Length: 553
Image (tube, rainbow, N blue to C red):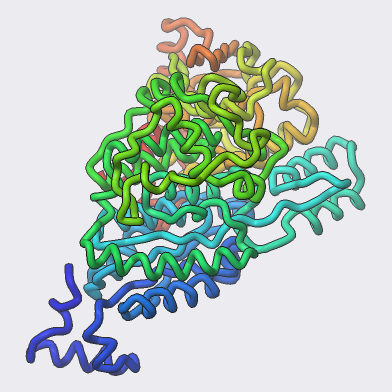
């Protein structure tokens, strides 16, 4: 695709007349047209500053000889959407973002693109679009929020949700809850821990689609504006060299991304989004390969919610590239891959040292010898399920307990707050998968309620839904096949024993095959009848979670 197809020749005078209607001069029209995909809005805290990022990118593009033209992408704040019907509209926006960006970019024949995402589905959605469109593209995010402070300790959104559980349990009063409310999220930016947004902004660096610092420079730092200007300038260099997303996002680059994911302790949502992005590049990520990579990759970071450090501290410690340099010491990365700098990853890593071994553990002194995410298999999840191992208490890595079954998130929250869940239980929340939800809601409210009530080291939670990156504890999601597709999770009953063994990657429902066969005859699959609009269409098209919940198959 080239803008010349849209603007050159006598027969394109009508198109040029419309470009002039925008106020573009002949000089601007003759230059490469660079689409600036701005995800700015006034409802997502991580996106309220993207107008400034957009203006900086435009300046960079213009300085380097291009004509910047802005068009929008949508974004949902998962925190605001959490705990009610709105969360059904979170994951599904990933494909809306990819589809609408593809349509805008190709309809208007842009020569290059700068993607400006920040939160959750916005990042993978735009990476998917970049792969589809495949014109020279670079990413620059809005950056992370600074951590809040309560009682002299840093806090993040997970602390806020857990405070609700603590209030419900009578551990804090309304005055303290209000203090959390007013101080937990002190600035604009993507939430301050290694949650889904920051995970994928960091992994964008690893994939080679963003400049150093993309994932970690705080939103309120002036360095973020400088980064945006450099991204605008660099996209013109990518245009001149004709370096495209699929030249960068190769099989080896995705291997690097999964490896870095394990070292950083990223959100479990990466196990949905990396396969979906790879799919757009014609590459398959098999979840079984994830465990193989995890077995070789030490976990080097315990960022919130897994530990007491935050993205601002990762940035000060040297950022993502410092982590990659540690991994490279053991030869765990493909460093000859191309990146958006026009240089190889090996060249990019020069000079990026680990400045704080307490935030980024040296490769020979990791938190654990294996990665932050584990994929479990067994009769309860024949196609796999996912847990953030680095955020699980030691005593819960191996657990067996009776099932407490709920058919929705709402039922589960009511049951947890109603003291139905006891120490040792395994909470099962089903019919919340990609098709069954539909939309595969995040279960942050139930997991935070459990943690806030002090049960996170005694209670496990299993779901065919998914989790926020802010979730901690033995929270196991993405159970595949999901309940609405006849997965085993649909036939679990209260009191059934469930055995979880995270180190050995197993999850077992201790019910005989004969009994399960009987239940399949007796227990009907529950399907929601009031699903309308986009969700209805999504439910019909979406794949299972183990395939990335993709619809472009």
